[in-house]
Each structure stands twice: as C-alpha cells, then as structure tokens.
Image (cartoon, rainbow, N blue to C red; front, side, top):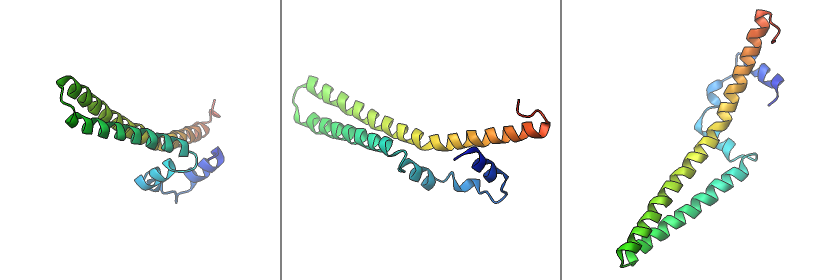
Length: 122
C-alpha cells in the first residue's frame, strides 16, 4: 500500500479500522501469496516436531531401561516445547502485518500534524 492510498484511507471518514484487525483477516493475510513460504515453513517444522514427539512417546513405553526412558521423556518434552515455539512464531508473523499497518498509520498522522503546525515535516 503506497503513502497516497494510506492518506486517502485516513482522511476518509468511512474507514472501518476494526475490519482490518479481525482474526479472520489476519489469518487470511498469513496464508496469502506473500507469506506462503513462511506458512509452509511453520507447518513443515510443526509436523516434524509432532512426529518426533509422537515417536518419542510411543518409544518411551516400549523401552525397558530407565536411561532410555529418561532419553525419550526428554525428547518428548523438547518436542512439545518446539511445537509451542512454532505456534508462537506463527502468531508473531500473523501480528506483524497489523503492527506494520499501525506504524504507517502513526507516521501518516505525525506527518499531518507537522503540516498543520507549519513545520513542513522537517
């Protein structure tokens, strides 16, 4: 979105700001064309960690020695932590666009304020 379009949106009184920050809009932007590689990366790593966690859980109950049980229990805990990390990473990427939009909104407001003060933006 270019700066002229942002100013047109901000000056338009019919602009509905709540429409852009809905969960559905943020998720559709995350799975859009620009973020497709990131979404694939998150899903790929997520599935790898789910498989690792499931394998560690199944193997935990099949081994007999305590040392092996500790190993697979540790792998299970690490896998669960990594799944959580992938969810947090995806959530941060989803919110990145709304933060960028808020910064552009703030920049446009500051520029308009400087113009009304007569500073000329300098």
